[in-house]
Image (cartoon, rainbow, N blue to C red; front, side, top):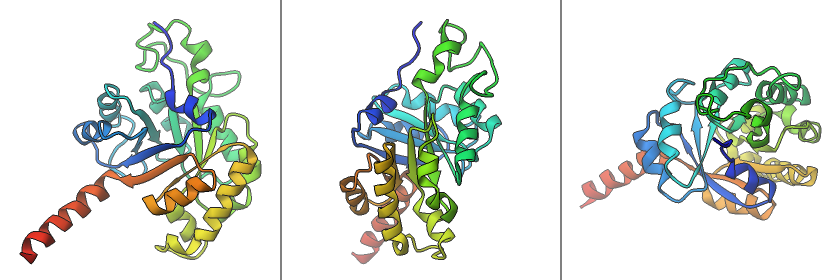
Length: 252
């Protein structure tokens, strides 16, 4: 059996714009509904959601039947969490709260087997099709993709050194945490200029730039060169649609 291909990584390296949806609802049912919507990628979040390395398995399995790439965000830049998520078959991770080249290097090492890293070895995982991908240990890194999140003033100041780390494929802006770090808690719109300049710097570094934001600002970021565009959150779509439906009916 051949090593599964990572279509997201290939498109990212080719500079294609890919739009995606952040998925915070746990379980497979909503994930499967979102998987058929036409996005290029879905991000299954285990940081700001009830999901964890065990429960994220079901959404990964649900999405696998659809032409959409499944990304996962670990709860932290933790080699144990990263190891477990990779063993579940995730090939692209967005690691939160990376503030330095050293932290980015730690994320890279967590994703790679020795001697280039510290990922623990198991020959019976979903990632290697329970031992059926015979050369998985030698070739796994070929299909893995790492994006690190820039979410603090410190990360912002060190974009170039973080981007220079071998094994980092892209830098992903987290506007909410970045706003908090810059003194604008709850007001990501207040750091628009800083976000735009960060995207310019990431693009100039030669690495892919990404962001989670609304469609209007996502278009602006695309024009600046960002290619990984998260344009919505599953629970926000459901909650706001429910709000609108209730208001509409009561108004009648």
